[in-house]
Length: 327
Image (cartoon, rainbow, N blue to C red; front, side, top):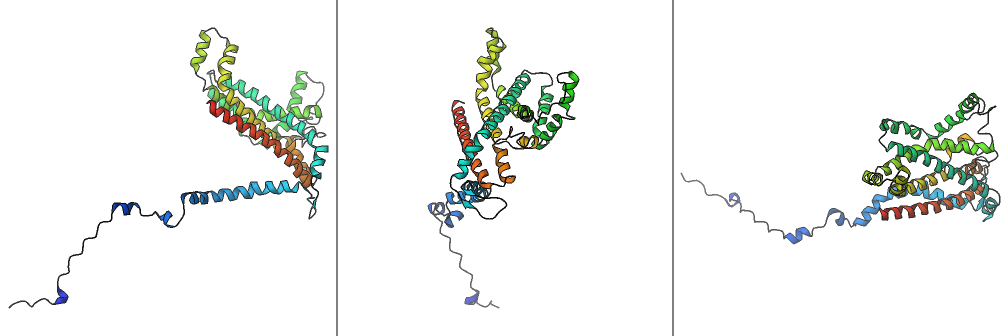
């Protein structure tokens, strides 16, 4: 019996046609997904920075501009509305408050920069000699730096207290004073007390930075200078100081800028008193705005303060650029 012949519908399918190979050049020119959407690399990078720029504008740029504008108005924090007065606030600040506050700020800034630098650099030199237990001492000296500034201020407020302070008790026992001294209540001693407090809080940072700088000075130079008969002082002047001079300049400038706008230690210890003897720019702006309720006056004083800070920042940037070129 012969099998039935296959119908046309049951015929074997034709083999698929071979796909034409895609030229390599066409595959290389295929656009990426981002390019297909029309977004360039520059636009994509800008979109990544938008959240940061928005945050900067919200918490830095807008308050700064609003403060500068407020300096041209007479505005009371307790009352709605404000009146445009032009440059009257700036003229009033320059006539009454600016120069005494600038003097206090410079005294505090210079004292609270040079004193901790001297202490920190001396300790860095000692630790760099390979002193026994230097690792433990390094950690111990960092203790004041990790304590919050307000806590440090309250601690030293207790030390300087005229009635039960540790300082008065120790000096009375040793016979250096005959009666208790109001260290924070006298104009002649209040600024010194504030500088001592800030020195205790900030010398560890300077010690760490200067110790890092000292460790970059090759020991071979010290050994060669010692072989040539150079004493400790001469080795310091000829080898040590030239090796750390750039680090010292940056450290001093940074500390100067930070102290120029320091607030918490002064406000907690003295509040700017007594009789304005410790009133710096940071404290004066706060007092004008939130105790005197004069926002216009506070903004004008803050604007002049900002100009001085910009000068300091410019000096810092120039110094950093010069040190980078020399390194």
